[in-house]
Image (cartoon, rainbow, N blue to C red; front, side):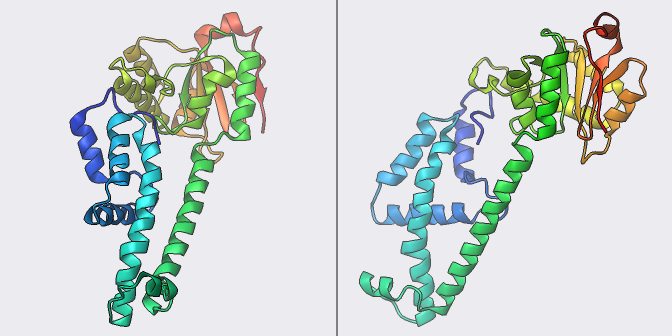
Length: 292
């Protein structure tokens, strides 16, 4: 979950987000969210308002990061919806009768064939979804050794006032390279969005757009980078490019063929280019590194 996805809280936007009821970030079917919605109405029908009130207060009082805290009551809703509404309904359909005694229902919870099948499917689905989410986090939100090696090279071989344009083809708030680059290299990344989501200065949307415009240059040429720098009003000294599965991307190929840039670091996963207008005065300080 991101801490913010807008410049400031907007009541209408918040209402629409709440109406969508999409807080679980499930990769496939939003099954847990649906069970949670059933659980809310189960509690409301029984005139039990404490947990629903807790849920809605989290959304109202913490609009920027509320979704993170709303997951706790949402998980409770899902359990309540499953235990008190969905499973009893399936069991009654399976047995052809209505069971009113709670002890009888608990004791015969798994006697119905339909209930057993549903629980098995639910278990398999949630387990596979959890594995998929974990794999996505590892792939998209975790720094690789190639990133760490490149960051270490940047910190040791570039001047402290260097400004970088990071082309990673990531997402504004889901880009581990962009997020960790400033902290681990102590260098400036012109398009990094992380950290600014807490500044309510009305420019968050513009920063996201700046990041997205730079990532679009991955499939373009050098002119795209120059135009991007001109639009933001800041020049850069280096271009940090993540390759795609070890293969060169379009921007990387164009930079390698450009007389305006020199590759100073090149590995199977990352290549860094220095603008040649800076190369003359910096070449004595830069150790070029090429790794097969």
